[in-house]
Amino acid sequence: MNFQNLHELLRAELERRISAGRLTGSVLARMAGFQQAHISNFLNKKRALSLEGLDRVLESQGLTVEQILPIDLAASATQPPDQADPLESVPVVSAAAAMGEPRIAPAATQETVYVSAARLHGNRPRIAPHRGQWQRFVALRIDAQQAAPMEPVLPSGAVVILDRHYNSVAPYSAHQPSVFAVRHGSGLSLRYVTLEESRLVLRPYAREFPVQLVRLLQTEAPGDFIVGRVCFVLAEL
Image (tube, rainbow, N blue to C red):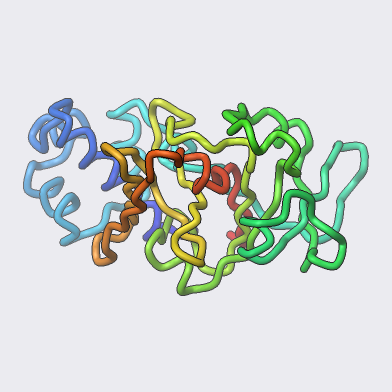
C-alpha cells in the first residue's frame, strides 16, 4: 500500500457517494476548501492531492484511512512475536486446498502466518450448512496475475486470510464491499460478489478487467461456490 493506492481508494469512495446522489463535485470542493476545478481534476485522475489535501478531503467527509480500506491491512509475519499477545497460526495453502480441503493437512501447508486471535475470531460468520466441519481460517499468497483485477485493494505478493465460515453474498459491512474467494471453473477468483437472479456476479476493482458470471442451477446455492470472505490482507507496507 502506498499513497497512490490511497488516492485511488479515496477516489472510489467519493465516486460511490456521487453516484448515489449523496455528494457532488461542487459540494465536495466547498466542504474541503478547494477550487472546483482542483477537485474535478482529482476525481478525473488528472492530478493528485497533497497529504494536507488528502486530510482535508477525508475530514470533510467524516472519513478515516481505515474506513476507506475495504479490508484490514496489516504487516505480514512469518514468526510469532511476543507470546504475551495471543496469536493464532494460519496455514498458507494453495488455491486447490482452500477450495477442496475441509481440514488442512501439514503436508498442504506452504508457510504459516500469525494473527491476533482476538481479531481473527472477532469476525462474524455466515456459514453454509455443509461447511460446519471445515477448518475456518486459511490463507493464500497471491501473485501479480491474481492481484491485478483487485489492485490496490489486494496488492501483489500479499497474503489474504479467508474466513471459510462466511459463504454468503450478504456484505459483511454496510459501508464497504466485501471481497470473496469464489470457485470459478477449475480455479479461484478474488472479487466483489453479488447475486443477480440465478447468477453470481464477480466484479473486479480495476475497470479494465471483465465482470465474470457464475450461473447457479436450481439445486445450487451461492455457498456452493463462495469459498470464503477475505477478512485480512497481510502485506508489507
